[in-house]
Image (cartoon, rainbow, N blue to C red; front, side, top):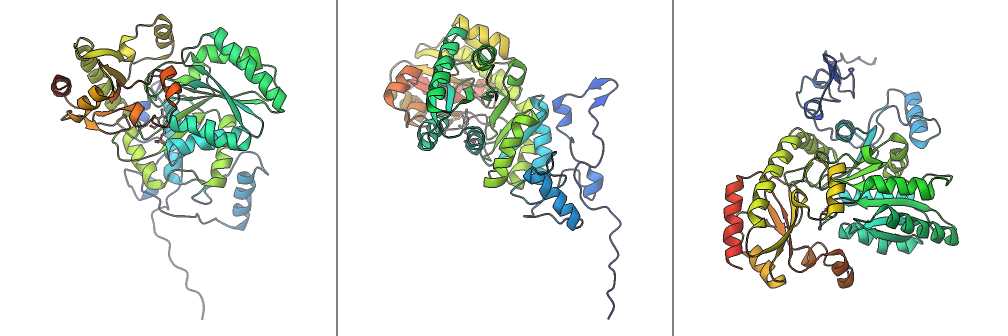
Length: 442
Ligand SMILES: Cc1ncc(COP(=O)(O)O)c(C=O)c1O
């Protein structure tokens, strides 16, 4: 019997990045909001599907054995330049690659990587750069699980840390870096990473990224291997803060928050120059912390409206905070649109283009009064997380930051009367009516 060749279908098979991308038009560089509608995907090569299909496959067929070998040479670093094609879904897939291309646009970054959660992005990043005897310098506060990752998990592998308060001055940052350098030298390691979170969860305290970059260059500048500065930009990114423009090397996201924006997925991201992304990509390939194709598809859907959603939420937050600021039962607000402290205001003016929609509300009283307020909200949902279309409220001291020791909570200003609020895209007057009636019950 002879083999009968099967006639291929007329339409081409799906392929990645087949056409040159339109990034300029009429001499203008296209804006991120425009590029989110199609960048990195050509419908012609996926049966005309306007949206990218979800590529549910665990592995990718090679054209021939030599192509398979070439891909693995790139993947394993035997040949520079990385993999030339898709290999296996623990490494990457079409949905994740298109998403990574689109995510990098917002931060003006050369490269981006997506992960199964914000924490898996952070854990993969720290593990990629930090080894036994190394020191991490970080700003405080950090999201509680990030603090736990550094203080409780990495310490088991001989990695130590030092921290400085978010608002620290150049001189204070210099002093901590000098101390970290001595500590690393004594231990036989290096200062492996400077890790920032700004605005910090939950206090909204801002870090002077420019001062950190200058301090790193001054104190650690003559080390053989440069120390990267990573920053968690979850609260203001990608719209209102571009840390790579202020001296950071790696931007970190919980994409679960504003980027996902609908409280219906969990994911994380990193962006920055390829040289900083490559070691993290290699570790992600090994341990499989990449996000799945379905989540990547949902995030592409979300990126189409991120500017719209964040703009509306930011406008809503300004109106709600104007109401809350004058309310007799409110002790104060940690809202970036109403900064009192001169140093924090200076950092805000240099680094941020918007005040965001997540803030801390300090109720007159303590835990009982805060719980009463939270239990009586009718529209805002009592839930942790932030950055969704719906307004959320939570109590960090009793919830997200419960694991932080009491003394550290007090030092960082995470008090019992702090309620964290993330404003959504509802009608602002309806939200004000909800906060008014809940405050009346306190
Ligand atoms: C600032 C910040 N970074 C990181 C994370 C962790 O992200 P994920 O929950 O997606 O793992 C969170 C979660 O709340 C966060 O608020």
